Length: 381
Image (cartoon, rainbow, N blue to C red; front, side, top):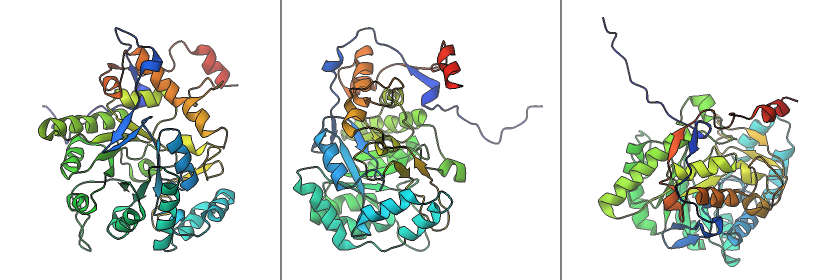
């Protein structure tokens, strides 16, 4: 007798399980166009810096803008709570491992100061940089207008999991369609991993979607809640929703893979999976210009009742420019990410990011170990 199934499970894939297939033609890497657009804003490289206090402060945002990317400033963090956030970040970096979570919970319990929002935004704008700011849904209605009035260009709304429909007994959820109409500025929303949720969010009028639940190096959502979808499949799901929505409306919503990227190969696979851009966190925390002093911590780490992040030591080992563009003598793919993308695009015969989204991929769980006996052996010693 056939045993009925309670549910069917789909096989899903992360970066380590797939490979990009070379194209039938090749293109010189210097002909690869890596431009990325959000509404009227155009960026030379498709890289966003994650809205984490250890990564983005106004100085870092200005520097990344000069290099062609976009940094997102966390206005639910220390930048909007303390007059001297650098002192607080130093405390967090120096705290013993067994005390850091309690310290973070205390630090982030302080109220947000409206005047600091304007100060941080204006510092970025006065330098001529594009200013993107991040808020959680609970604070968006109150703080987004303040940030816009100060000159913010792009709003990013982030939570562990974001959907267009939220049910609550205590308050009316954030209605993205209403918010987009009221603010009239580009709105990016995250995070999401499924086709249906992505499509509904796009139908609300947003301009960009962040993809990823729990893959970040400083995030423990998958361990604490067991929730998440590996990034290759998650990106493909959301990119499929983007294409459906574009065919239906003619409106293009940027899909941004957020988290889980460790090396140049991961970054290239994100684009081959359908991403328009990537958001990097702990990678950029390693830059000497990052405020975290060689550390990074998850945005959900300070949760007062159920922390879902951890402080990780990444080391301040190189400059932001070298991380993005090289030159590098590091052989493991952890520097010159833009160079890796351009080279992969050339190998696949891709002139643009949209071309790269069409590159063929294969399931290849041995892609990083096949023939690598001596590399593996050296890693054991």
